[in-house]
Length: 255
Length: 255
Picture 1 (cartoon, each protein chain N blue to C red):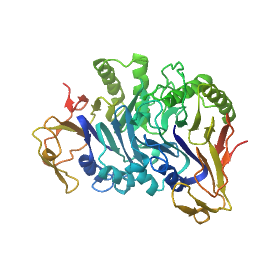
Picture 2 (cartoon, rainbow over the protein chains, first blue to last red; picture 1 turned 45 degrees about the vertical axis):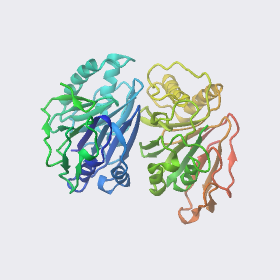
Picture 3 (cartoon, chains in turn brown, purple; picture 1 turned 120 degrees about the vertical axis):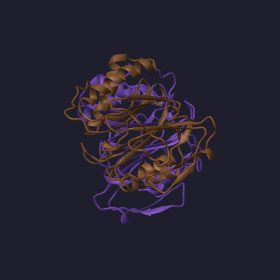
Picture 4 (spheres, chains in turn blue, brown; picture 1 turned 180 degrees about the horizontal axis):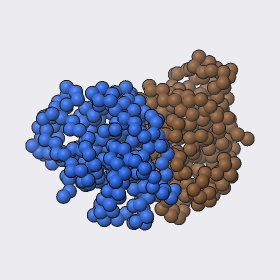
């Protein structure tokens, strides 16, 4: 299995603190050492870093920890291979273009006998069940809505049916974003919180690091963090319900 | 205008030496400071780095210069904006998936009144003429060959017609790769060489750096470098002919 980390904010924010704890699980405090990756939206563009090395041994992960890239939507993943060999093309997150926007996707779980008919519009490059699921989702969204991106409520409704269909094949915790929003679906393990005014100090559970967010934020900042297992010891994390699809916009979970 | 750098080899090779000289043109020895990018194929996967900062000021470019990522096909680009604002989504190279393979593309030049009909299969995210041309090429390749990648000679023949059609709109120096080969088309400025046994010392023209390739290679290694302007002062670079499309495989220019 793997672990997921997502961030959705109302102002561009760096993910250095959360990623530092998360990356420790990539071979140090946990055994997810079969690659890792992270994607940052920056306007319509995406910075996409993947590495088949363990996150704790990766010079690129080191850079991410030291270089505060600011983004309103981030998806990260550390991998423990279940399907697909350890190779760069099997590292999450995956990126594709649909409706003139980049879409970023990462998955935690294991899908059994999931071999949907892919018509060629989106085809996996690697050999994971995860990338197959991502290609299937995008194919079905295009088939349903054609060449025009629909309003968000319609998108959410169709996506909800799609992820529930896929989840009948196994565990399907996933994060998906096209830059303006972040969708999170839970089959088994996913937690979230929102950091907002009044900000406090947070302590990582995987490393002896704290940060006083009141020193690095403005009162209007709002940052939602979504993660497989809580990252901090002194904050209130909310567990997703199994089968729940949440939509985060501007650092808020929409009802 | 921009500058292009490509590498095609028969064994995974790092591009640290050539990129070091090339990156100096991103704001130091030349004025291409409106972003840069580089993509490395690694098996079927791609490491894709883009940055809207000047290459000489970019922490990610610093990492690339220090971290020897080995690849058989690399495409890099430094940008001086002509069309499209300075933004991450307008940085080359661009990446898309076709036939279950990633395709990487970068362009130097300026296309006038180039507004092909894009049917939605591949749509630009940014606002450059370059990304429009890339989407058009992939759309036409899929339209021509359907869901099956054709043999390389057929691909080359159709691609040749496509790039000549696009080049009627302006300057279209470009590099294109799906990981196993590298296509290079010249409208105006493009040079190439092959480094092979017996290897010698090469001296960069943009920085006081030399490398004795005989110390870091085996007699079987073969590395083709393609670049907008020669990178070294003591090697024999061959100019492309205007209108020439060259195909590089395993470090060789095919006839």
